[in-house]
Image (cartoon, rainbow, N blue to C red):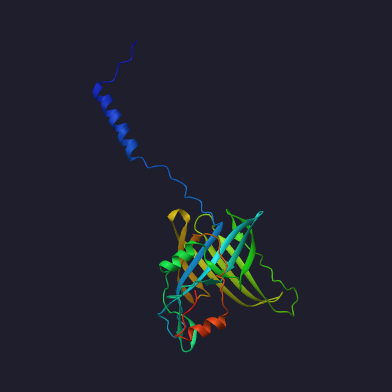
Length: 251
């Protein structure tokens, strides 16, 4: 016996209902893009110091970070001294100090931004490199063991850690002073990424140091760091020329 066919109106209704359900159904969740830290980053920090003589003033600090794979480990290099030929907005002469850091939330001007985009120039003095163990899934950390094992010898040790490195990283540096038995003092600097911008080429977030300094930081990808510009004259020669306005400076 033949099965009765549905009326035309019912078929139209079912087709329209199917289209409506498809249009309103939530789209499948897409996984967040994976962030790759490998490479060079220029880091700019703006913060306030409530314990200073100018607690409302913003201060700035900058550095260059470089991340590289070393087998199954991650190598983190920090260059704490970034150098610009154009120092506008960064340093000024105050009370006899020709290189007093400007109390302001310094941002690179056009010339300074071009220097950064070509690869920031760094002074190698004070450069630190640490090797971290772990993985992008579990995070990375350097050794927590003090370099000295004697209870009678005091030492200083830096512990580096990166949590959630492939999504919204948290960078930590813990400074420990002590010996094999006890820690006399400890400080913590924390960079917590809250925004990943421009397809992972720019990161920004909260900055905190020792529970006292608070502010924001921003870091963006750059080419590898460059060495300092070589000078044709000694510092004494340049100082003499600067103090003699009647003499034309040689190129």
